[in-house]
Length: 419
Image (tube, rainbow, N blue to C red; front, side):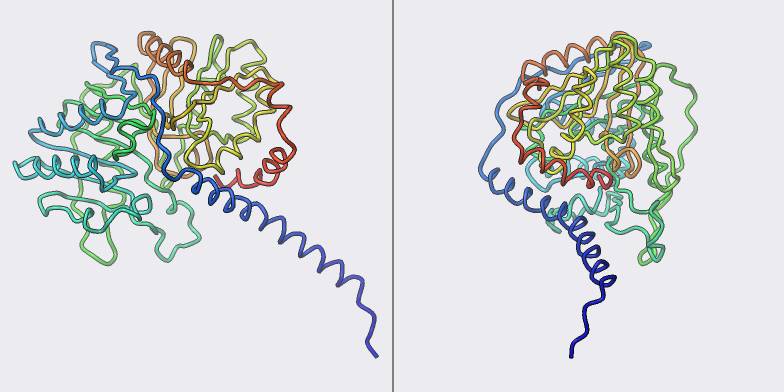
């Protein structure tokens, strides 16, 4: 004779299944959306978008150039590499083995062959799909492959899980480049991104950034360690150009603070462009407060990015933004990958950090902070050009969206804490 089921165990079983469903469902929906999006994208090419030619700005008698089109940037970077006489530091997150990637590899190898010291860093995880053949470099180049797994036996230590998301090129003491562009043919024409080249003391700061990362990660457990990079201290300080560097190994994340301090000081406008926008609630609050005190807050995002799940999670913040009077603009037809902001006609940042957890509290990132009216004016003009390729999201349009869209945003919301 079977005994009656225990009510307590039945409740526990139901609760356990419910908890599993709550955990599994967001991931299942995310995987499904990604597969469907990848299928829809097959064979599709980006549409032409308005282009801004390289814009030169003088800050404290130093030349800075803003690049918003990949081919323009790559031409300038390759020319700088070809002119190198002493030393090149090259660091990138993605380095594709396509035509553009090969062009950079050839230029760096040629520089090394003529006696230039060439040091390169690339992120192994970001380049898993790149062929092994491409990743074989001449012995004359010194190359660091930042490993997929870097924690060793300290698997619990999250300081070792950050990806190297920086994009830096430094040539001699002459010029340095930094910004959102990775290296690849697709980025040269199909993506809207922003990079900047700098001269003067800021070049030294970027050299030191590269060297600090190199020295922190040059030791290997299973193969010979890479040689250290020993640099002289810079002789001058740059007053109007500063670098903010996230370093998860040292638990240093100043980029988030840089943004929040600047937004809190805003009195006229905050114009932001970001590929991926999943802020924490404190970041949301400073934007909302700025809008409520009359600041013109605008966020320019891709209408459809290369990561559809990120798009859906980002939409979970739109109600708060629109209710506060924050304007949302969606870039059409092409991927906007820039990570820039300009505030009050005086403050600008250009860099590698998105507004999400991975960038602001997880990865190795770098942003240039520039306090200068001419630079801010140039960035505002670029922003106005980008707006001609955008559709503004109205509050009425947002509130009228379909029920299934609201449901998907709700289900995917918890994943925002992971991204």
